[in-house]
Length: 165
Image (cartoon, rainbow, N blue to C red; front, side, top):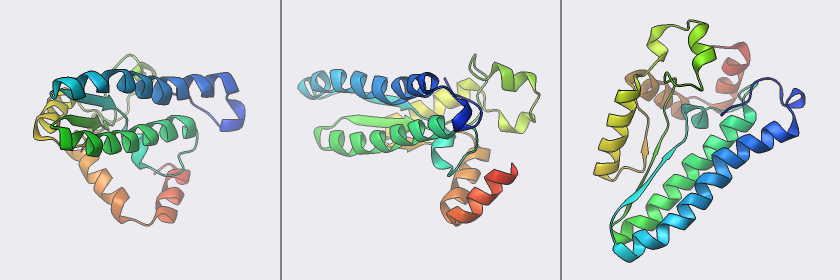
């Protein structure tokens, strides 16, 4: 679930719902799961964040992006804590995937290059999990975007996002 529009135009209830779904629920579910994983000394956790977690200052998607950034950071911390116990945690940060959530975007016919097939997202996630990688960005186009985001100065990225680039 995500919200659209300026923060001042979104209801506080909608913003809280996004935060509960993308932050509180995964945190509570992970907290409930980890003691059993530690006791068995096998298994792990896969969380689903978003490529939005990597981008600064996104007009119209601030709560969503911030909640996914929390989840990406949380997942990397969790991976570091679980690793000494032989356990894994991987957070996947997909870009656009054809799901029920993106149905409205699909109807707007964005270029096909932005879409990553769900099967590719799942395969990349499972490979990353098996390899013990804490974070995975599926899709070559998003790997490239992620590298650019990490290299470019944040003020430049914010300006590009404001212009809709």
